[in-house]
Length: 329
Image (cartoon, rainbow, N blue to C red; front, side, top):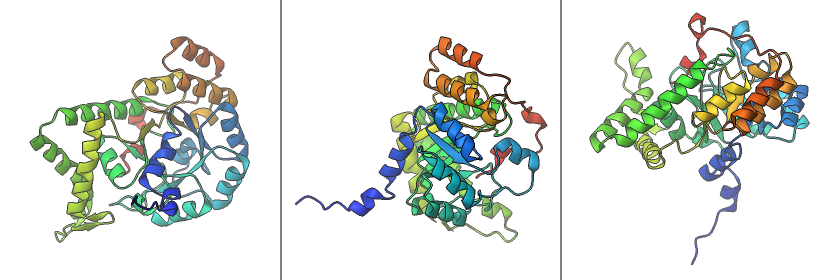
């Protein structure tokens, strides 16, 4: 007799469905928006999703202070005004913000370093939620940890709100190189790689004055976590890439920037400040979508570049007092 299918489980929260929703965003642009009007601009330009925020990353960076989840009223207004999926950000490790966002009915949660981290040791146990999550990474180890915790999409972090794409390129190249290294590693070296990735869950030990040891984490005991990490790494090695949709984010400000990140093997891009801090947001949004879709055609990318006015002012990475890409463990 065939096994009975649990229809409730099929509809809500299986890993397959979470990753499937994320894959529906593949090849597209996710745009940060702070008003219903901006959500209209994003949808009209061809964005695949919007990220509902109170402030774009450039304004979060310049304002300083503690950046939290957006107010539910704002998120609801954006959800009501657009027909494309709506994502929203929760602070790293802030499970209750994530629960609020899930109850609001957003389509995906970004556990984001752009907001002020809530937990200095652990991220959210994303497998405990029915809603899919996207998380940032700067390296393979960080990506493997987030996927093992339940992330359905990964984005390279870049340096949000700067209009400077160099960090996004750095993270994409590092991720590619570390995947290649893992593919070529023998069994002994792979065990060493897993041990190195596992160290990300021992940050609490480093801060303890009395030598506290980590036996359990929000994701299970340390040995089961190691097995989960090993399983994800095996997926990476078998596929030659991350097993989830991988976008680029942080500092993408022009159509050429978007095309550059797509040429580095990304499945799509996140753009926020680069659009709504430009001189003509609607045209810039259309141009970035066009360049993302046709990144392999330099003529189209050139035409897209000609569409825009003045790009957002950029920041030199070395001059930053706070580097958002260093948040997350």
